[in-house]
Length: 412
Image (cartoon, rainbow, N blue to C red; front, side, top):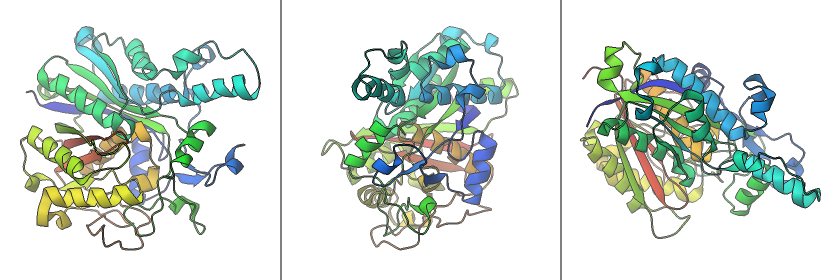
């Protein structure tokens, strides 16, 4: 297996529209969560969301924009950023050994919702001619491949909230295994349509509004947590063989060392300690590391009652008595839950944390929960913490547990 370097990163998110912005806002502990100011907000029980400051018209000409769902717009801009950051000469790479790997939980949900609104609410038989192309789950991966002439695999992964972690893990396997020399991998999601938000609301998983501060409504691992807050955006990374990146003088942001994947089979929405722990152990095994090698963890940490307690127990099962000594970040308190794009955004945040020797905070952790009793880095970024190796956890409805092992850029 070849070593795999991360040479490019790109982000469109509630914490900003660039990697620089995202790092600055995360380090300051700023929340991208707010009350929604849209026409359908009064029909939501808790009109909260984490929106990305983004205008597609600033990035695409009108004919192209008419063919892109908001999620694909995010994906294309994040991919452009990542490739520009990687600064690689793609003419030096066989296009049939380059591919795109994108995770999304809901695909072009905004476009589908718009089509249903036209058909059912407005009673019209005429919908946008590109509705199918905008709504299909594989649109983002396809457009990235087309834009950048990547003629190898163009693959889409839809495993709910672990989708983009799976996409990065599967891309890593192909680059490490020698079948690809370049991969753009990540995720994109734009789930803030009325239909999507009402569907999530019906599951009773969304947070209640914090009356004193709506931006503090997502409270991972806190006793008073009430659920997650939906977010939107995209994050992409460029993966290439380590030796190739070094030879061309690339800036290396870090390394993907391993990837673990398991499935809970007890219940389609209920997480299991056993399954999450098995995914972490599988990731460590694939990286040829033991539990002592992990310096910090980016938790799935959604802010739901069930997830946070189960994840805490799973971390304890893997790391034993050392679990309490490992700092754990739940960054969804800042950027919301981007569903299929969360794993990619949190992969980027993990790499940034190691680059800058910080551990990002878990915001809004005010009330201790006896079931969640580890070091979650409450409320303030921990500085001067030179983590070398991190886990990034992504767990999902449907039971797909994906864990990435990431290492800071170093020669050893």
